Image (tube, rainbow, N blue to C red; front, side):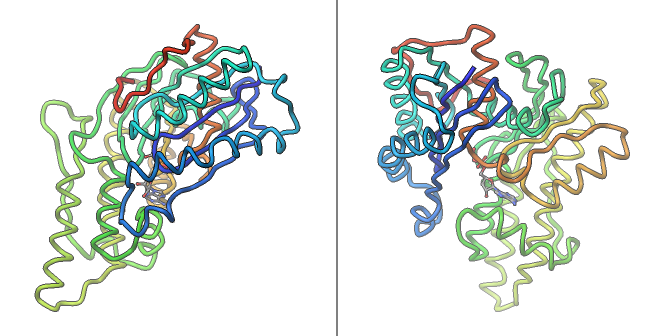
Length: 333
Ligand code: KG4
């Protein structure tokens, strides 16, 4: 089954062609990062306009790159939630029009389910059930993936997402937007014990997380240096931050895996590209005798292929929509 899949929830426009949920024929991605960099973060209006400008071109390019015609497409899938509402709407409306014009089913896909499904593309042998930590710019959650379309959130951030913590910390350190990668790169030259950063604990649910206190601590250190003239050890701060975020995530994930008896642990989302987090998960899974699934870097960030992968399983579960489909800024998993 060939699915044309569309992603437009934030600042990447992507159109992919995916076969049977597992084989990527092409994934055309346009990153808007340069458009937003000057503002230090994503400007929703600019994001929506940019999606509109490039989405049809990416779809045309996808057909050419995959060597297929419109008649070969069996269904159209799109991210319909969560995300920046204007941005998501562009993808949903494009997908609705394409499905109508082609006379094929329309499949709505939850963005975080898509991130989790990126692992199906990277690991053909991976099947639910497994535990997945989904860490991106807008969401951070620990998910019990009981089946392809049956998921339960075990814990999530009470405030900022892990990616937001990286992006805002990078801004105050003058590292630009998006900040996760520059912090990751810089951290490799720094001492991860240089700054004492908090490891927030959230009461009631041990699997819930919090990153706003960590972000504030980084901002306070940077401001303190600015005000007193003390030199900021940026590499040390980057390394200390990566360590603090990683320890917040890895410990909880391994504890949940132990409690639920999972020996298959997946990680997904843009922040899964972080080298410290990847390394710490490798070590923790090896120690626990668990198998780690973590997508290659190109499948960690937003892409169209992950929507086609999850879209396939949503279709098999009978989850299709008609042209009344709407876009939503937030939506339960
Ligand atoms: O999954 P994604 O592309 O978009 C959302 O769905 O939100 O994630 C983007 C986030 C940004 O916050 C970005 O700074 C972060 O992923 N990121 C990283 C790294 N690469 C991207 N964070 C830490 N280390 C990285 N290497």
